[in-house]
Length: 234
Image (tube, rainbow, N blue to C red):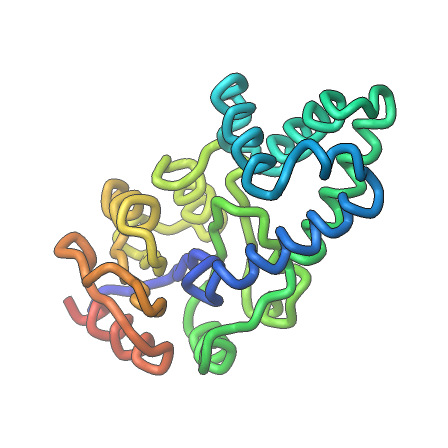
């Protein structure tokens, strides 16, 4: 029997659904800007502010894996364009903190917490996210040895950097690890390219069909332990 030591987990759309979280955070963010920067709101509606943020990234591609700085710096520029001058950086940073706080208001998927608690008794758990969700702000973090964001290594999945970070922390080989995530390219392809096992989380109403590249997949968190066991028996 193969000894699986490490389980690495994606966060968004694996432990919780990301769309309602981001939509709520964006609403809170824009409402805050309405209060503190009315000239910005007069110039940018939510859609055009997002378009500006994407255009900013096209002009500053070095921020691709620094999503927090990307949001702060693009908002600073939008505020400057709206006439806030030297106040822009402070307003942008405060607004980002409002967004980030709201972004942590997640609801775990059914049965996630109890399954994570069960798995932590047998494996080392590490979370790997391309986003800026902060697992340390949630009680489920007690079951994880470490949590890493793409910003910390300046490289997002499917780049190997996050996966290698997890392997190094545990001191295990790729074939002693399983990555669990929803994204075919970032999670499944990224993990398989390094030799990790990969389990596809199919937990959204519009989740893609199970991909041939994934070693296993699951539709309900309660099914995950048996999927991990099956890979251990290969």
